[in-house]
Length: 173
Image (cartoon, rainbow, N blue to C red):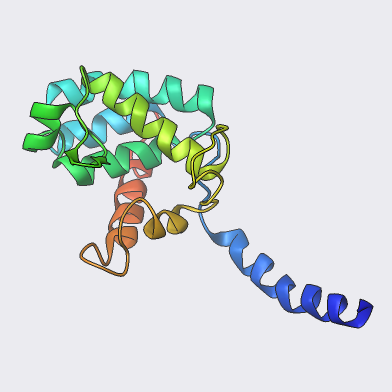
């Protein structure tokens, strides 16, 4: 039994080392609000989306999720705040309900729900949800938040590209 346990640990070790380079969901913000605002302005995002940047960064810092991830996902999902889903439902994360799309009273409340969901998935926010603590790395979201092996193939690479574009901006003037 001990030999089997040692072999299992040895086989698992390379996987753990390999994972060190993957971006984590639960981390400090890797960019500043200024960088995100410049990124969104350069892409003609809606003013309402730009106005939510400080809220997103503050709430992400409080919860423990990287705000760059949230801005990246919402920029893809909403076409920089211009999609009907964002404008009519205040849904910046493309979040679905049992019978269609989720609808929120304000864009900030939509962002809060999105951040909370991703915080639960990463395990930094407690929940009895079936997806609690199911996603340590951003790449893991492909199994739950978007369908990596279905219609949204390539989403992860698009998202990482968006996050890197945000990071490419100077931190302040």
